[in-house]
Image (cartoon, rainbow, N blue to C red; front, top):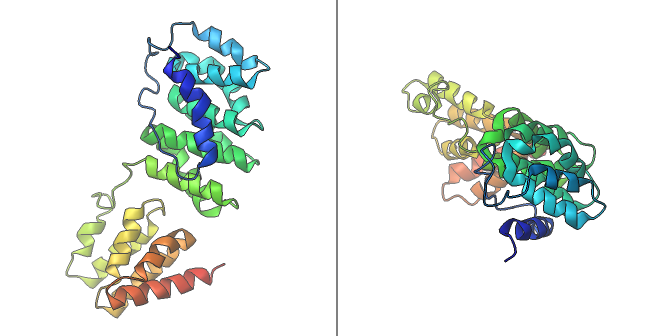
Length: 269
């Protein structure tokens, strides 16, 4: 019987290469734990040495197996990164997947490659961080957020956005440190305006905050609605897809507010 991980190592990058913009993460649930005895019968050195092979097929197989050694594979992270940053996209996605499943020792390498000059490498690194899930959040969030809004390549922006979505749960917009939702229910207009201002400052990857602002466009107070529009404009072009949806909202004030916010954002670029 062919080992399951061999099948994954061979075919996962093919799937990623065909439709990498919206991958389905298996979430590296074993990342950083002890090696999986069912898939690590060989010493880790056996697979580590194969990373120097001239055969991409052998390196791909080694990458797949090393993912299941957890922390024991840490000495081979530099060699795995070489495959991540190579010209072979299929091999690169397998390396990203492997780093994600190795766990915390590999996360800094993935974060570092988000700044690679090669967009294909940034694309793969973002995939690896998304595959890692919440455990990789940390320093990755700010860089992924920046890529999702500013990278010149749409595939990278989309992958970075997807990766951010995989890192939930994130900061709740109702966290007591922010007091946002409580503030929105206040009888004081000043407190409500401050709550909206804080919602506008929430990083754009927190789509719940953007949806909440769009809902608030229906408020009957012109002053309040203008503040909501300001908060939406602050989020920039990353908010446009959700605003475009709001243009079909059943409530006229939501439609008009979304139109105003969209026009101001589009005027920025």
